[in-house]
Image 1 (cartoon, rainbow, N blue to C red):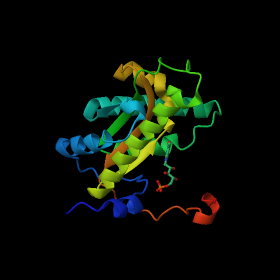
Image 2: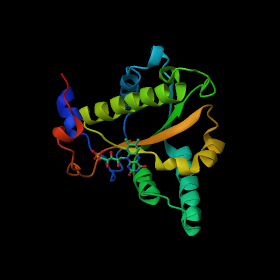
Image 3: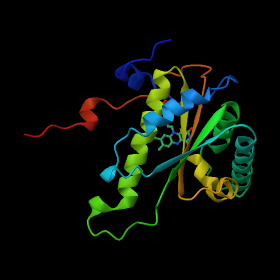
Image 4: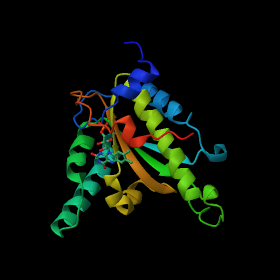
Length: 194
Ligand SMILES: Cc1cc2nc3c(=O)[nH]c(=O)nc-3n(C[C@H](O)[C@H](O)[C@H](O)COP(=O)(O)O)c2cc1C
């Protein structure tokens, strides 16, 4: 299948929550990660690191997320859609953990535009969106998951990656193409000034 063009991929991307058991070739994942790394970043600092989990490590990480979410839920702490996301992650053949590197260089700057926590989060979001859109263009489904942050300490005990965990991305072959969530009309989120 040919890649979709950029507009079709942006329009066609959906959050996928059911995946087929089919694997995704490492070469294809590498291609997506390379495209993620094409994102703009402040001063070209590229503050991201991607850790791809497959096989046994993936299972271990999902288990600690499941256990933590279950115990928080028992204590009546809000866990969002974490347990549903655990189901999706179990199905997806690979999970990409996204880290922010060098977060300690933070918060000293006087100008808000130089604040690393803001600019790094923006840059990492851009890289993640590249990954999602590229995956869509290549016929794959993805889910952006912040709910893994409920178990960030437990995850880091396994992955032992420096930097701050920002999100996880499930990637695989979609079972279905969900319909698009409603979007605000242009008039609600754009204003023109002259
Ligand atoms: C920063 C961010 C974090 C998200 N975290 C989660 C999450 O933890 N669990 C989940 O099911 N979806 C998560 N999503 C997906 C959103 O729910 C989804 O993008 C939104 O409902 C719009 O649907 P669509 O992606 O199909 O267009 C996240 C999206 C973003 C941008």
